[in-house]
Length: 250
Image (cartoon, rainbow, N blue to C red; front, top):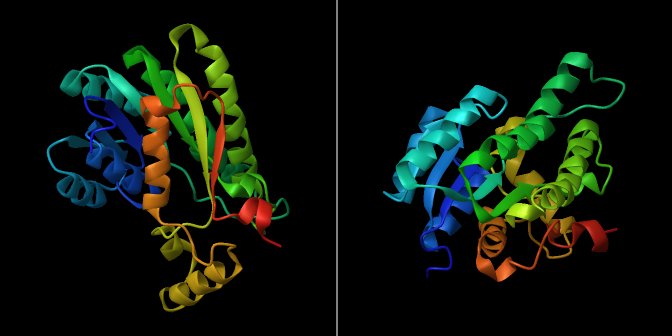
């Protein structure tokens, strides 16, 4: 399959979870490029699975100098970039009563500021007519307990897809956003004791209209569509890939 043949992509957080699902889907469709992450071990494992078409770059998306190096290195290796997936994020749990300034800044830096500057730092290295793919969350639409800042940041990310598309009309660079729901990723391990993970996943599946939680491949297939020329008439759009949770669940 070759819907992305000769396209150069950069995927932040591409070493695990949804990001790796996107990288796998891109690789299967003929793309080349870079996956970006902070964990060297998972980066090495991920790029070994992807093969020669992708390189791994160890970088922190909240560090602007790191991101400049990411895009410069990718362009030097593969040529100008066609697709940027700003996927890295997470790690923001708490309520307005419990989240102080330091945690506020950390959450916004990772889930909003990094998205904005990932795109800004990519632009000098992008081909006109390229595709920017942002990753939202259905927490932007539903007030889940303890996801106050995360949901707010993702709501802003959904808006950025519209604003970026408007800003970049003269270059025909389009930005769209994928909004996942509960997805089977290593994030469960960060918030749920190991012995409870399967029970928690079963519970989430039971309340999903589809009867199952999402898989990284579900997001990967959607990202392929947004990265390909098949979606060339889409700008500023949000694609809900959440098993119906936002609109159909009770």
